Length: 167
Length: 276
Image (cartoon, rainbow over the protein chains, first blue to last red):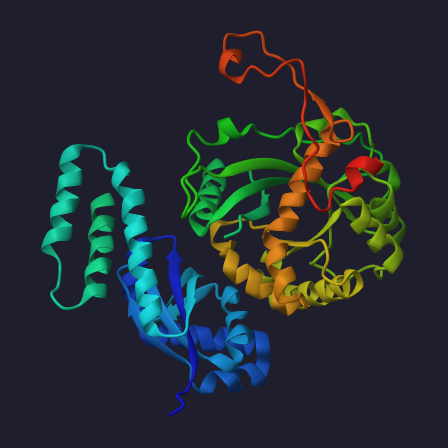
C-alpha cells in the first residue's frame, strides 16, 4: 500500500489583542490561506491548493493551527503564508501573523512537538508569576484540567490556563 | 540549530512600538536584532546624522529569546540613502556610535564605489521602486571578496502587491548576479505585526531564487559575518581595539584594559579584515 503523502504545518496565529482569537474558525483561516496563495502564485498556486489542502485543527484559545499541504508543492504554498496580514471572519478583519513552528510528515509528530513546545512555554512563564500563591494556583489549574485519554488536549489546556492566569 | 538574526528593525520615535517589536522578535526566535536609523542627506544643508538611542534607555529588561535562556541582543545600525558621493564621509565620527553601517546607493556609480571602496558592512537593495541600474558582476564580486553583504528586506512586500513585484524582481536580479552568496534577508519592519518567523523567512527567500542552503544562510551565518565585519571596522585590521576604561568603580567586574588584543574573529568571510 502506498499512502498519499502530505506535510503538516504547525502554525501559531499571533494577534495584537488576544481576545480576538476566539472569533476565528477553520473556514476563515482556510479562506485566508487560499486567498494569499492566489495572490502570490496566481491561478497555478490556487489550483495546487484545491487538492489536499485543509485546515486540520484550530485551537481558538491558543491560536494553534494545523495546515495540511500536499507534499509535492508544500514549499510553494508555504511561501505564500508570510503574506497573510489579516483574516476576515464574520464581517471584521483581524490583523494577524501566521508563524510556522514546525513542519511534520504526520499529525502525530506535530502533536509531539506541540506538547514539547507548550511545556517550554509554561516553564518560561512560571517564573513571571508574581508570588507563590499565583504559582500554586497555576499548578492546581493544570492538575485539575486534565482530560483522561487525550494527551494533547491536556497539554494545551495547561497553556491556556496559564494564559488566563497571566491576564 | 543555528542562531537567527534580523538586522533591520526600523526606528520609530514611539518607544512602545519599538519595545513591542523587540519582544515579538525575541518570541519568534531571533537572537540578535538591529535597530535601523534611516538617514537621507539633503543637498546644501549640513547633514545631521541622528544619534542612536542607547538600548538601556529603550528597554529596562530585554526579553528572553524563544527556546534559549539568553536575552536578546540589540544593536544600532545606520543606513545612508546616497544620491551623491559627498554624502559618505569615511571618517565621520558619528558613524562610530553605530554597530553597523549600511548604504543604499541610488546610482550605478555610487553602487560601484560602495562595493569597491567604502568602508561599510551592508549594501541595501531598494525594494520599493524599479531598480535604477543593473547589477554588474565585477563590483558585486568585489563586494563579496571584501566581505560586504547585500540586503533584501521583505516587509514592503507584505504591505503592498506592487512592492511585492519590485521586491521579488530586484532580489532575483541581485541573486542571479551574485549566485546567492552573501545575501541577507531582513525585515525592515515598522510594526510588530510585520515581523515573520525565521523559518517563514527562510522559505520566503526561495521566491527570491536562493537555493535551500543559501536561504538558511541568509538569516543566520551571513548575518553573523556582517556583525563580525562591523566589529572589525572599528578596530585596526580586527587585531587591536581600544576601550576607554571608565574610572568609576564599575570597572571591577568588566575591567577591560586600555588596549586589549583580541584575536581576529575566525569567520570564513573575513578576508577583508586583512586587506583593509
